[in-house]
Image (cartoon, rainbow, N blue to C red):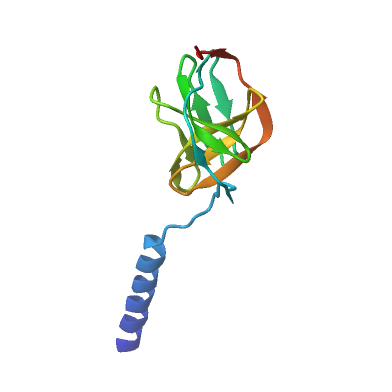
Length: 132
């Protein structure tokens, strides 16, 4: 009887520990990147853009948002907006800025992690320049 009780307690404890562990099942591909702050250029996004990083959680960039230059990286210019919260999501959620090269979205800059999350194929953006 005592042995059975010990086995049940052990099984219960193991079940509790396993259930309490969070597994990082879906990853965002990231690479360390350099970032140099800057300012000046801005644009307005004409059309909504849905971006899929292969995590099952697409990121939507809303039409009409104004993007201002935050800086640059080796992958392109880094822009942020105050018009929406931009996030990249997998098992974790990351704050994100967009990275643009030749008027195409090439990925996301994750400022907290200081990494670049590339997209598989660049997406041409429909934009209106707001530069003076």
